[in-house]
Image (cartoon, rainbow, N blue to C red; front, side):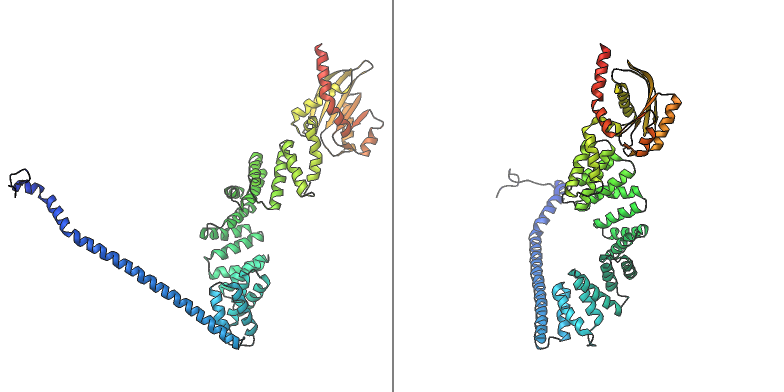
Length: 489
């Protein structure tokens, strides 16, 4: 053993022990109880594992007992039915298992047998067997059978929630909305917090144009089932029908990206934007809708049509025509697509015709000035007055000097594509007399009626219809350039 004062020993004085003693004491205490802690933790783990094994064993045993019990009931019922196919107790036991397990084909077949027997057997609960028969048929989408079973059940009990809800839902599916509302409202009174009832009731009210009433129920249904996108869409439609366009627009915009509801949301969002004269926003809506996959055909054609009409309103014929032709190839008789293609295909090929019909007033008048300046070959033409009547026509007065004659000529350029009648020609003739013009030239992109033509037979008015105007428009730029070049020389 070494001495206390050797290098391997540390002597602690009473003072230093008091200073360092607690740390050393703690360490010594922890070391003394460590084996006990390990033993306790190990025992706890063993107990937990043992309890889990026992629990699983009990659950498994319970499950096996349930399966054996179910199989035993079915075997017993099948045995009794082999002896007596009309054994009501056996059918009820079998039907109850199938119904609880949601084995709908077996449940419906079983309860169908009970329904057939119920009339002559007082021991069968006619209400329950008809209710369960109706529900099983409804789950299998066998509408007529479901309706028969549920309607019969309701003759026994009109205050039952399941009967009223399922029969109301069935009436909704059959589009008998008024009947559906009556039944679903009874079910709502029995269970005011049922999302399924509130949903179907709200949808039914919307279908009968009671948007404000529908909103209340659909909002509650969405609060209880927030993932119901179809109800959210119907709520947006309710807002739209109730003239609350901003609320509707917010919901439709929120749903534009949804793969199922998105295309129709885009269509309605774009429609609202058009009504609010937001053409660019509408274009964006329709384009988003068309980028979706697997769009329903009726929604797809309407998206294309409305987008094409917006492009036409913006004079963007080049983007509108491909859409219209695509519609015509898939749905030849859709609305006025054929007429629009015939009209705008020609316009797309003739820039001046576009300007004449569709351009702003300033561009239209500038084109008309070109026509006036080039109308009479080898003439000096001076425009003295221009009058524009809204966006319907423009009157241009000019002094024309040719080698053979000089006179004041009045031109009227009409933008209407339809037939021009006698009244407009008479008005033009009165204007000629007011300004003391020697001759008038009345030009339209449409045609003149027979009455209008007869009126001008004895008067110095030339009528120019679409065909001749198209010829003028095709050459006016060339003639104007030639005149400008000769004036420079």
